[in-house]
Image (cartoon, rainbow, N blue to C red; front, side, top):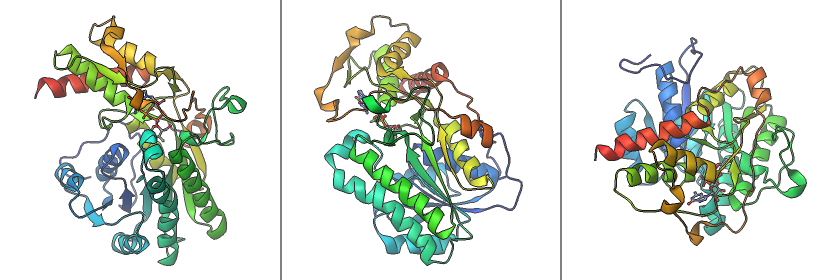
Length: 345
Ligand code: G4F
């Protein structure tokens, strides 16, 4: 383990074998941050694929994780992926990179398909063309947005690995392509490729453009007198929300398992956006939350996923995956974090 790095709260197993070379895309995002933290604590050599010449996120990454080796590359540029794979010589790849904001994907559908869909193919090809189909284990970040939640396809007791897909956004469609091409490489070339079908996972590393962080941040600022209103889209959609650190631990478990497979990671509970808003305001002693919330029509999507609810039984049984943070704990963690952040400015 590296000096000065504490064991992450969410890892309940230690990788006591030889340190691995691990290549991560999307390392500057929420899940990438949790994963880098956990891998470094386990003693692995971490390589992060970072896009663009003057990407400000690169500096933030280098400040937070000086132990990570930055490799320049882009999921839309196949030759850069081949180069990255040759540099990192990875035992494991975590493909977390994507255009991940569902609302944004409606405005930039072609870019979304290129990055979140075809980018997966480009990366799998880089592994195959460099002769690493046997050596490298590949994690594909699939998503509950692939299910869609239409009337004929309600979640019942929760979507699982065999449920029907009917994506409702360019993001969901792109991710479904990524999911199937990943499965295809597993079946065609015998590659160790596992897909994690992750339901919404949040926390203090979440970007402000996602609803939970937008809420926790605004609630903190409103309670401190720094902001008057919280502008939101629809409050009725329901999501199955968990803590990102727990889910990243699940990704790692998928690649340590004996066989490649697909696994749902979810909390098994569903709550509306309104539930999240009400509970977040209650934590700072504000009960009349409606006085502070206004609708922003720009946040309403051309098509919405009404309800997401997942069934994580397979991951719990097969991988012994467990969650440490529940819905109430998640909201408290985020609001407390944003209160501390805004109070210290
Ligand atoms: O926080 P969200 O933007 O997350 P969404 O669309 O569920 O997607 C997230 O989870 C997926 C897993 O299921 C990931 F694959 C994906 O990459 C991403 O991490 O929106 C949650 C809900 C939606 O119904 C949205 O319409 O909140 C609603 N909402 C209401 N007002 C809003 C807002 N969402 C955002 N981002 N901003 C709002 O002001």
